[in-house]
Structures are given as structure tokens and as C-alpha cells.
Amino acid sequence: MRRRALGDPVSEGRRVWEWIQRVRPLHPSLDLWRPTADSPQEAEQAPPITQDYLLHLIHGVQAISDDPDFGLAPAFSGRIGQGNKLELSFNTPTPGSAGVSLMIGEALGAALDTSEAFADTLMYTTATIFTPNTIGALTRKDHPLNPTPEPYNYIPGWKMFFASDSPHYQRATQLATNIAPVGNGAIFTFGTPNTYPTILEQW
Image 1 (cartoon, rainbow, N blue to C red):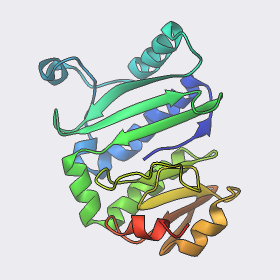
Image 2 (image 1 turned 120 degrees about the horizontal axis):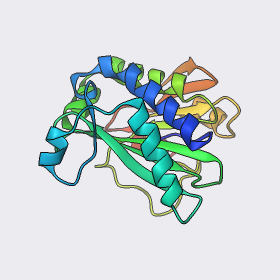
Image 3 (image 1 turned 60 degrees about the horizontal axis):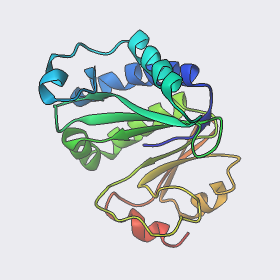
């Protein structure tokens, strides 16, 4: 999942914390979030992250960054070495934008592959919290990316969210196999986790 939204780093951090609280009950691998660490042993012994920890870390990384744009991987959930990793980026690709990426681990990935209802719930929850100017996608890393940018200027995904004022909204509507309105846009499903690249090639 990825998104783009306007917001200062601290306010975006609060929004990320709200998202963590909302997704925790959705799957066992999303329940416990701990700080990323230099070794598996340190990660195992780390206490659960708190909102204060998250906001302090974002502020600290921003303070030592030589450039306006910066990123960090503050937390992970699930089994060590096989879990889900959270990554945040700020002021990239454009000043004032923010991004959230969830690198999906084995257990969560298997659950998403086998239950479209669960995938829809995760996307709906994410789109509801990260509303402004959002593009979200559920992607599979075993599908290679094209060497040139996609026409919709984003990473292709099985499920993607476009705001209703996006210039790509109409074409997404034409190609989607299912459309679920939410917030300021809609979640578009393009086939299945195996077939979405073929559908999106028609864009």
C-alpha cells in the first residue's frame, strides 16, 4: 500500500498512529508493532511502539536530515524476519507530500491472497484514514515493474484507490472489475492478484 497526501510530518505521524490502531484487529500479524532494530535479537526484546515514540522518531530524523525530503522505517509487525514493515517518506516526490508503504510479510500476504473481503477491508480502512489526494495500491512483488512510468504515474496494483478528482479516475472506472466508493474517491479492483498486470496493460 502506498499513498500521497499533503501534511506536515508530525500530523502525518498522528495519522499513521491512528491507522495502526485501526488495522491491529484485522489480522494477528498486525496486532503487535515494534521498533525496527539492528538485529533480530534487539527486535525481539523491543517493547511495543507508542505514539510518542513514533512522533519523536519522525521529528528526530527530520532534524538531522540534510534535505527537505527524508524517509524512515519506524516499525514492523508480525514474525521477525517474516513480518510487515512500515516505511514513511516526506516531501517526496514533491514538497509537501507524504507517503506510507507497508511491506507485506508472508502471513499477511497469504491472508490477502485467499480473502478478497479481507483485502477490501484493509484497503477501505486505509483509504478512510488517509483521505486527501490519496493513491493506494495492493501490489505483488513477483510481478515485475515496467521500465518506463505507468500512464497513471503510479505503481500498478490489484486494488488501487483514486480520488474522484484524479485525472485517472475515469479510466480506472472503465477498466476496473469492481468499484467501491469510499471517502473522497473509490477503491478499484483490477481482476485478481494474478491477473491485474494484464488488465492494467490496457490503460
